[in-house]
Image (tube, rainbow, N blue to C red; front, side, top):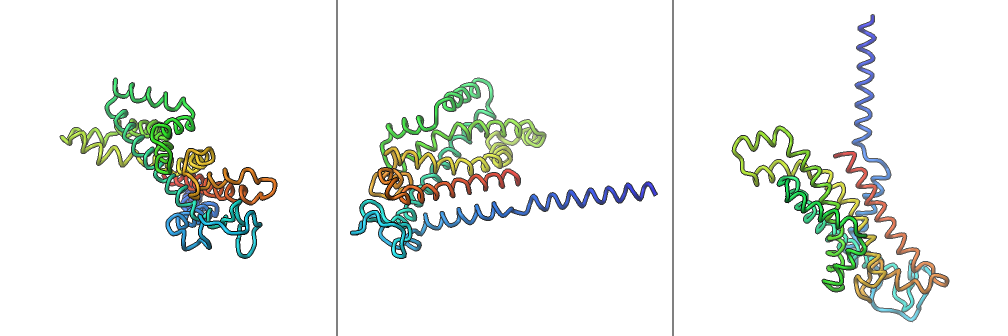
Length: 286
């Protein structure tokens, strides 16, 4: 009787663990909504002419028009359709953020990989440089790089990527240190494999999962930083549509045309929150 009770209890625990793991694997409604928002934003970035209704550059004779059936989100101070400018602005904001994340991911992962595997003086020098970079506000680092490289979407993206490389480097180093000390890596070295082969085949693939999850968070952060640089005038030059620049051009009309700042701001918030939600979902998986 007692053994039957124990067996039943253990079976119940197994079912509960299976149900918990199944619910963990099943994406939540928030995650699905985040994926849908990011997919729509990516489609707008890749094919803006499919979604846009007007030319985002040329103005009309209806400046500061409120939202209507013709201009769904109204027009700006020179009569340009706000909806079309937001759609075309997704290309500069999202592709710029993607480039920034790629720069930070590649540079930071490489620094963390070298520091974690070499150790000693190399590790000390690289990590002290990372500490210095982390101690400086990321916006100040981005502005310094832009001053050196010049204005423009690509240069702003590179600047944001440089400012985020230190975060990737620190996480990558911690993951590399945990992987390097594992038994299968020691066995790979013991079998006569070269250092480069072990790093590429074993260390790097097994330390990338948390770094990829961090990249999703940094993608949202990069959008915010690029919008900030555009708002300050250090990003994409006018009249090119870019989300931060759109808000900057409309800040003098907040009292009379609120939609010019609120709606682009909501677009930024939606994409950033979706990227953060996707990152949380990835961290649960990895």
